[in-house]
Image (cartoon, rainbow, N blue to C red; front, side):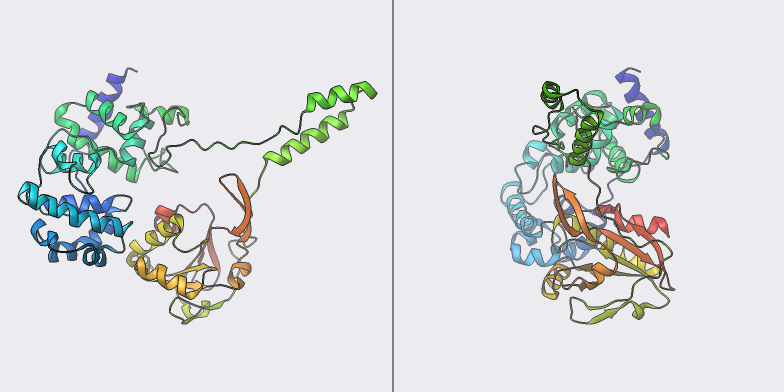
Length: 423
């Protein structure tokens, strides 16, 4: 299949099956869109749409926002990722719009990128969505999907953008941006692509090989190659054989012993809980971030999501908590109660919960009674280092206090969806 045929097949599929594809950010004018896109960096559209209504109501124009300050804007957006920097960017962006562009969002990319907090991706989104220009905004979804399909062989966002606009018909470029984003957001997921549901497998290089081309990373979040290196310089079997030959013939036992020693150095098995589905959930009682005692017996007749995480305010734990926060109303309607557990104290939990507006309790298990009862403390590995710590694990406990599901392969950005898919 030629590259031209691949592009033609993918585009025709989307034109036939997804004729209308738009941004999922809510906005009513160019100023609101540029604000929403700046806020959406490394954050979910769902969360941004929860934050922006009040922000847009109180700061409807660039002129009004320009008269504000970053501390005030921060109070509106504190629950999004990197709120301090984004608050500063929004105020400075609004001031530049007023002083240099008369309060009107420009349509040209080279002018948009002059604005504070506006990179090439944001500029392309505004140019294509608002002004219908043939601009291709490349975020992590577009980058991943286009590389996996084989539409591009790109090592960075700019390479991806240039290759895509070279082959996609001009009239389809703006819409193609949304096609690829939505496909990456709901089907071609980063960790577990839903190949069995995908309708693009006929043209997909990844589906045919089930391999990621290491020469061309599939995600902007994985810019560097992380290779596990095992230092085996101290173990040199051939030299041992030569030395042994001088004294006596090499015995098979020596070879087996050396092999076993090598395997011991390269193999690592992480700790997993000894609890099983169907076990009675261990009872517990502990204080939450507000100093209130919380026990499992408080939630008779409810399903409990008891999730264990390593530490407050770390990137992965923040993404996991925000995922559960964003879908909290859906989980509540399905009779779920969410409880987070780590070894952090009440003060740390309160700061974490307040900053990210978490609507559920975080239990301060400083003495690790709950952690040990659920057997989630043990040996784990990260970036080549092996150490003891809390193993990220979630237990779904049914309304009778019995463990219904145990999730060990937690996907932090999509954890709520993981749980909902099981219910």
